[in-house]
Each structure stands twice: as structure tokens, then as C-alpha cells.
Image (cartoon, rainbow, N blue to C red; front, side):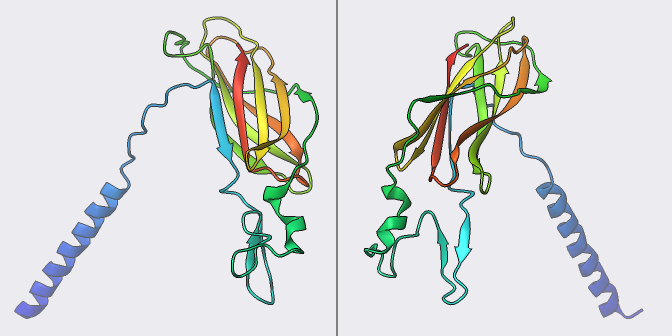
Length: 200
């Protein structure tokens, strides 16, 4: 076999080995940072904004840019559709009694730096033609059964659209559960939701 061919094969095998090693390193999972339990969670809808593409112009419209013309200022006709100008609000406080889906259990660890009940991983989304909703997780960090209450505020551009009080079913010691909390109908704009534990 010619020497040039042998050298070429060795270089090729060397490169393949380096690529394989790089792929193996890339697949090594990073250690997730420890999360401190919280009694307040906030989430926004900026990652899941419904969009509409104008077939004639190719312009993509969503609730963040509708109502602006090409130079960035709303026209008189567009102002009626400006989501930031929405003044609608649901009066009073809506009471909800959602189903809590048990997802797991961990050793109770309530103490000076850990609340009796905590919330995490809240996400705000819209169910088309229905309602805004927040999916979140509630953790009972206490040694006994807890019946927490959660207040959620759905807002648009800093203005309250709806407030709701969520009566969570009893959670046993160390239980982690998932909840779906419903907000206003989707004909009202919402860009943020803040939920907090008001009673453990």
C-alpha cells in the first residue's frame, strides 16, 4: 500500500476519534443549579405569543407589535387594536378549586430558609378561544398536611386584568403537585401572571 494512502487513513481515523470525543463531552449532562423554594412565582407570555403573517406583505404581527406602522407609531385606525391600551378588568376576585395532580414526594425540609409551602416552574399560556392559564407546581415542605391558598394576578402592561384566589386541596407531608390555574378569556390581553402563597 502506498505510504501516502497509509498516512491519509491515519489522519482520517485521528479526526474521527476527535469528533467522537467531542460528541461524548457534549452529551455529558450539566449539573443543574440548586433551586431555592419560593412562595411567589412570576411568569410572562413573551415566549408563547400567537403570531399572524400577512400573506401580501410578509409582515409578522403579534400582540407585541400590532398597532404600529412601519415608522413605529400607531395610526388612528390601529389604536383600537393596541393591546397596551387595554383598560378592561374583571371585577372582584374569582375563586377557583382546581384539581391537584400528585407528581412526587420528597423529604419535608421546612425551616428558617424554606417556607412551609412553595411554588415553582410557573408558565403562562393561552388556550386559543378559551382562557389564559398558569401551570405551576406546589410543594408541601412541612411535616404535616397543608391546605394552601394561592393568589394569582393576571396583568397586561402592568395593569391588573383579573385576580383569582385558588383553594388548593389538602397536600400530605412532602407532596409535590401540579396545578392549572385559569385566568381571563383570551379576548383580553394578558402578558404576565404573578402567583403567591397567601396561606399555608
